[in-house]
Length: 437
Image (cartoon, rainbow, N blue to C red):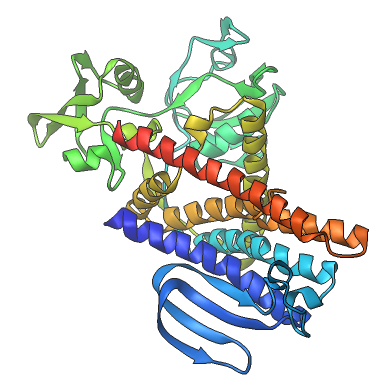
């Protein structure tokens, strides 16, 4: 039920904002909007304005906008003042792209909301739990930079390159982006401040740097993701994991190794209130995290930014999502990304929406931001039927100085329809394989 409600909420808001973009742009350029509906299907009630009928419909999956004369070219009706086709290609393009642009704005608003209101974050303190003897770079084992530099378990990282560090993620972010350049760590070792310079090992082929340290991750559960397989099986915060299968566990790395040899049902022996218990966890989902839904060694804090900081992060994160999405699409085109793993249909969206909803409203809103960017980019692809296809038609008509023929328009739309149907069928098949088998 949670997944269904979360799916309806997310998809409804995404489509509603999209259609609102078309509506506002059409009104701005003088196109008459006959209907603006929140939802689809049977009409619950409506209010008639001077031109537009505002409707609340029964099915809360988005909405639709009906502009005057949208089908005039296809039906052969004469074009009247205020009709869609009474405006030039430039104004029509503005109306077309305003839908996707509203999705981009929605993504920003989602991220802005999360950071301005504040959210609970689970994080690893910047304390070294273990130092690796060696690391693998370019297929070769080398002595780890951390070992060479003399870093020790228990060292607390205070700052890196003069910037204060409050979490392990902040430390990792600087190291990953260092491209092998020397970094200076200021650490607290037994109450004494020490400065240590480290040269991260850089893998040029994979474009990442490593030092060879892990945070403190013992075998005590600090986080159980709500709605996760572990949560459903009865794992609780504070449980000490003793065995995974028949393998003894003393740290998170032992759990990671144990997962590699466990079947679809993971057997955990845990200690709770001095008693040992056997818990069986059924793996679910398509990613590694969802297979269990537990973490160890993490702490909790409230993250909140002022309005200017939240807006800055909103812009930055939205642009990053756009770039990552474009990179993912290019990976699909070039074959570097497996579509069976990267794509999904309504079942996948509902599954993830439900998981994020259970783990906190802020995770669901962030998920909505991600999907909103996807909708922004997808709709601008030059595929007939989509907004991007309509942009192409309007550009051609602007260059041509007149409308393209009805026959060409119909062929163009039929091609687009076949492409969209093929994509929908493919994602539905992926969903079926993913969740049925």
